Image (cartoon, rainbow, N blue to C red; front, side, top):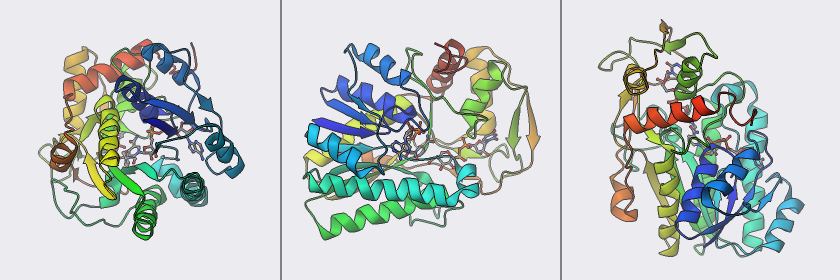
Length: 340
Ligand code: NAD
Ligand code: WQD
């Protein structure tokens, strides 16, 4: 299939491009580079062994820009990663988050339908479950109260896309609820490249390991979990990328609306992650225990059985692969894409 990948220069998008090409698909990237570097696409092309990945530096809110892309290419489907994703920033800048994520998706979907491309895979998040009513979380679990505007954009966009598919059943909409993506391509050539202080656990750990930050702060050790620290379902980004290739199969089978959790089904605590990182990589991660981070929940992990049953997708990489590949990327690229 020929796929439009919005946000394809970013962390998950760049890894997904590799798996798409490996599976025989081709792609065109639209990205405004607000949180990415085009060097990622050059490296993706090298890994795949093509001259270049077709790329348009276009904002998805720019209707004319998108029209030009759709006039130039015929797409079978869109994998829609483009969006702002920093939880804390969304609390400080709610308008910017609602405008970018929601207006952008509305423009994208309108241009898609005008060009008769009605197949979309949307990057959603486990954050839509709020403080989940059941653990492990199945797709039947009711959506919950999000604790930040970022999470609400995902929850609202799920509803928008659901309603559009309901009104026009010729749409195929796949909502993929990611758990906690970590890791990097095993080549160490592409990976997560956060601007400023990392919000997420794994990039913080790797920046401590590489000497950019003195120590990790662990946000609370008094949760009702085995060691008191928060438990999450970390998933290797290459597994997550392959989940998108599998989701294209749902579209080929004319799924209508389909929702899948993409997780491993295993919950690891913050201390599990720190200990695995130290053991596998032989690097010490100094840490202190700090107070809880507002909005955090104790435990969040998936039941990923539906994706396995219906798509034949299952995560293959374990915690050791995740911490090894995260460190490999950071160690080889201490300043991300900025230096090479
Ligand atoms: P990322 O920031 O690395 O990638 C997103 C890309 O979208 C960036 O390259 C950015 O420049 C681009 N972008 C943002 N707004 C745009 C716009 N208006 N027009 C065009 N391009 C735009 O983030 P990621 O981690 O790769 O996440 C990809 C998607 O997955 C996002 O929608 C994110 O919300 C979602 N998601 C991420 C996580 C996670 O922990 N990384 C978890 C769940 C869901
Ligand atoms: C994981 C655990 C923290 C940093 C977020 C978003 C979610 C999704 C994935 C996009 C928690 C602890 C973290 C640190 C710490 N993103 N931690 N010290 O909060 O599960 O999910 O990213 O959709 O929407 O909310 O991920 O990596 O921030 O935290 O102790 O410096 O690590 O308290 O228990 P989270 P995270």
